[in-house]
Amino acid sequence: MALRLEGARNLGWVLLNSFLRFIFVFINNCVAIPSYCLYCILLQPLRVMDSRTFWLIEGIMFKWMLAMVSQWGWVAGYTVMEWGDDVRPLSEEEAMVIVNHQATGDVCTLMMCLQDKGTVVRKMMWLMDHVFKYTNFGLVSLIHGDFFIRQGKAYRDKQLIYLKDHLDRYYHSRDRKWIVLFPEGGFLRKRRETSQAFAKKNSLPHLTHVTLPRLGATQVILKTLGPQQENGCLGTEASTVHPSQSGSKPKGLQWVVDVTIAYSKARPMDIQTWIFGYRPPTVTHVHYRVYPIKEVPVETKPLTDWLYQRFVEKEDLLAHFYETGAFPPPKGQKEAVSRAMTLDPVHLCVIQFLAFASGYLWYSVLQYFYCCLF
Image 1 (cartoon, rainbow, N blue to C red):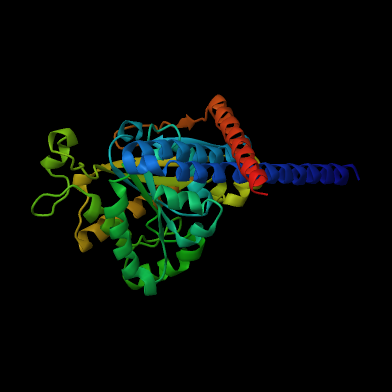
Image 2: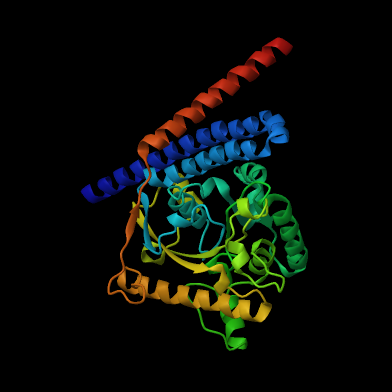
């Protein structure tokens, strides 16, 4: 009887905690997202006169928005442990980030672990499924210039054309540095069976923890944003020239950052978990591996092989992690070293204060105009 009472008490606490978190997140969205949008509308004259300053201000606000999402998980005890290469020195370089995709929580995890990587968050562009356009955060991503891609064979060719046009129009004009994509094109649980059948039919590696990546978006990004010589090769000597020495032309992509996300007990975390916080505190592990752009081929067959090899390596990394609880050490080292990624609570409190103060300001302004009109 005592155990039942204790269980009921714990369940009641979990439900109350989840309800209070939901209310907080709901109010957070109702305050922060409209404020972000209204400021962007108000600053449109600045965008016309000085677009660089406008996108600097917009990027700061965008980073604050992502910090709020990170806070939802951090307050619930969802933290990140980082492994592999240190990507912070690359924060001002242009990079393409490829990530394995297991659940909607992958995006939240990236939002958290990139918060302390310099200007990366405010200067990054996301490629995400078009469904996210219709979420509460969709309008923010539209203003920021992220690209929403529609999946399926019927849309594939047109989407790649749209992607190239989007990159040409928005990537450099908005001073973007990192571009993030999920080459698998969907969640692991949805694509694994199809991917394994395709691998068996074409004598490709059998993968369990990841799926075979798709080439299209990766190739478009490399060809559009990569530094090129007259012969079309990436990673030329000309690409190392600073923009101030070669006119206004940007250097182009310099790195590929290969990110592998591993969840405790192989249980992916979704956005609902981040919002409601009903899972006990847990650590998500993120492994980085960096490749110079000159090592990445562009032509279809070599690039396909290169990309497949990256996901075979991800499979090995995840298999080792789920067996031992740690990622394997880099070549030439005996032990892998992890780094705890933490958020600054003072910084988060300041952001929350500014968000609510801004929300109250806009409420007062709109209420004033409403009273004047009616």
